[in-house]
Amino acid sequence: MAPLASTLLASLSRTIPCAMFPLVLAMLALGAPTQITFARGGEPALLPDYIASSLGQYSPYYDVDLYIPPPETCHVDQVNIIQRHGSRFPTDSASKSLEATIAKLQNPQWGLKGDSPLGFLRAYHWDLGSNDLVAFGAKESYDAGSTAFSRYASLLSSSETLPFVRAAGSQRVIESATNWTYGFGTASQFTIIPLAPLIVSEEIGSNNTLNDNNCPAADKVIADAAQAKFAALYFPSITARLSRTVGGTPSSPSLQLTDADTVNLMSMCSYDTVAKGVKSPFCGVFEPEEWPLYEYYQDLGKFYKNGHGHPLGPIQGVGYINELLARLTGTPVKDATNTNTTLTSNPKTFPLDRPLYADFSHDNQIASVVSALGLFQAHSGKDTGASTSLLLPTDRIDEKRKWVFSRIAPFAGRLVVERLQCGKSQGKGSGEAYVRILADNAVQQLDFCEGATAEGLCALGKFVESQGFARSNGDGKWALCSA
Image 1 (cartoon, rainbow, N blue to C red):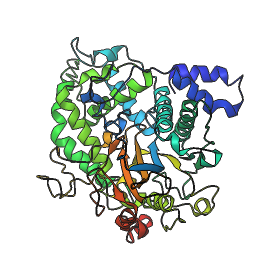
Image 2: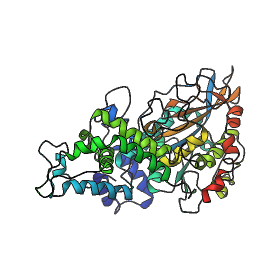
Image 3: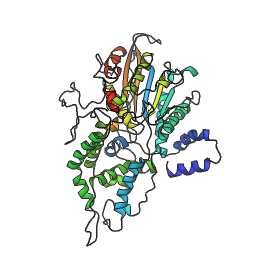
Image 4: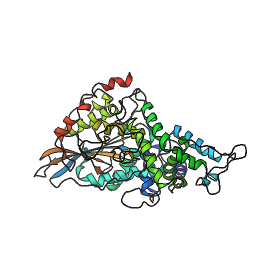
């Protein structure tokens, strides 16, 4: 948590009940710096777009597009949201690596040259936490809840239609879900207050469709190799440029940074900015043309770890897809992968009659979910002039790729599946059921769904048919997760 928010919580902990802490987190988020904007279509206040939207999974949330209402002959009657937690501090392992890079540069054995873009490190003090949500991230989730109410309030007419909210068991995910519910309730002027989120355990051995810890055989070997190959081709020139700005002594002429150090310094642009609420000096170290390299490097990591590029990437999202199909069709969950049957067999912990569902998760799991769905494949054969390759190249940037992770699951990124009734009549239950999917506000073209329209609509029956991979429990691949 940001230092100010942490200080306030420490003092408040002596005067308020524990049950109020989620509410306090949300209230503190309202006081978080609001001048950080990452929206497309204009120059952001603190970070230019070429940086803000090139930070991969570390990009703070931005709308990829303006929300487009459904066609006039359609109305939404159910909404399913899966959303990543808000902006956070680095994880434990990342914090150690990042701090080591900074300590290397601050070693008095070396001397940062007077005109070095890294000169600010002479006075820089590492004060970032690890793992936890930051105040800005809490506000991202609060704002998302407010937006959800504003957009879908007409679906909620009574206590029986309250949103059903779930959260994976990490604290930052739980806090994000709670801040979302507070934003939702505040926007309704507290006429509709969602219940506390159902927390799905992340303990090893617990089935959980909101976390990617159920497939131990899905390691990072492929992703690490893909990133290493790309980095070896494109990062040495950046690393050399930075190394030249570090002085030395007669016995130690200069400090030789590594490409891993370069990646760490670029990652600090996001971490330091969202933690402190001001543009980080790390962001100014790099040239505009260098940020697309960092973006693609991170895209490769997610694509080849949990996405289409890993043999066991999509299978990890199958359980969630089968839960989604159950909600869309109002039928019991049919799944033999990672659904928690204790929860899904109980209407209190997995209701099928709610108009709005909000699930809170992690970026890795969302990568698996969109891959299992069939979204963001490297290329679609229907795209004129596009490559037919199904894998992202590791020797160059694929400028035509659909897999741009800052547009898929940035901090607080969300996938929204709307069920619509379309027809001449606008009465409830009239017309034919359709599905529409939005990623960070952008309507997705459902090329995998027979008969899908240019407006992104797919008949519900055809959508269910299109999800054969999930309905078959991953064509036998789930067994490989524990092989």
